Length: 185
Image 1 (cartoon, rainbow, N blue to C red):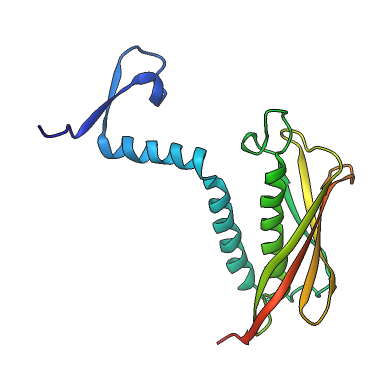
Image 2 (image 1 turned 90 degrees about the vertical axis):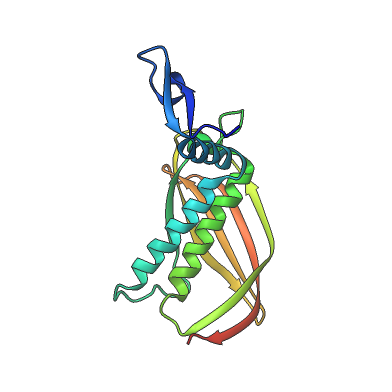
């Protein structure tokens, strides 16, 4: 037999709690909604969406005529702890610090190298993080990123997770190895 082109979904699943019954939705809508729910719960889709938004913001910002910040300038990125970031103890999960550090690093390097003619290939070879105090649900915080040190092959960055009270909740240090450089074409 041919499968139906529509799916009957209980009204409570689509926000129709006001009446008892069912809503008929096209199968495609149900499949896309189901895929979105599975993707968000299994693959941390918000991470990839956020990376795309950071890249779009960087592209828009690079079109402006502002001068880039100096190499030793600090980049400040603001965040908030959302329900998807917390663990069962109602504070930000340790793995989320590394994800947020990834966003902060991308923004830092994008702001530093935005107006240069160099294209660098940097590989993260080591990172460490020290947790000092938890970030709680809904708490606003900022990540202050800076270049801590460099030598002939490596760059070292520091990312401080600071609360609104200027307390440093965590410090992340990242070592990058410079693999190659080339001029942008």
